[in-house]
Image (cartoon, rainbow, N blue to C red; front, side, top):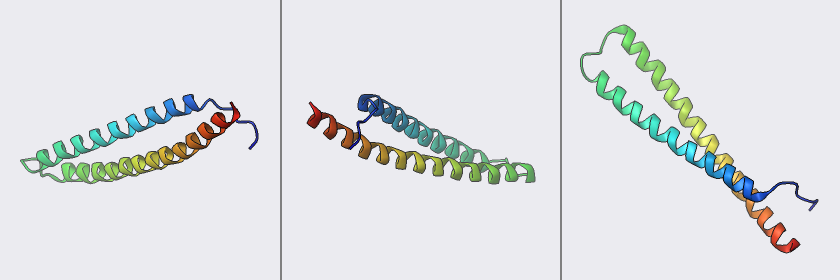
Length: 92
């Protein structure tokens, strides 16, 4: 392996921030979706609000897709971190 020019501790910190943000996106998405469903189950049933709900639901799916991509990044970084930890432990 060529000399690794990255501090795997920095990579671990970055992955932790990514993980925390993905979890926060999920919590916000679920909370907002739940609140919107409560709102639309009451009097808010005009065509404009129905259009808003459709757009919101589409955006909710986009956020869910972003969460999945962030999860894939985490898995990728876990693999890199593992490799770098082994490399650094053998280098010492």
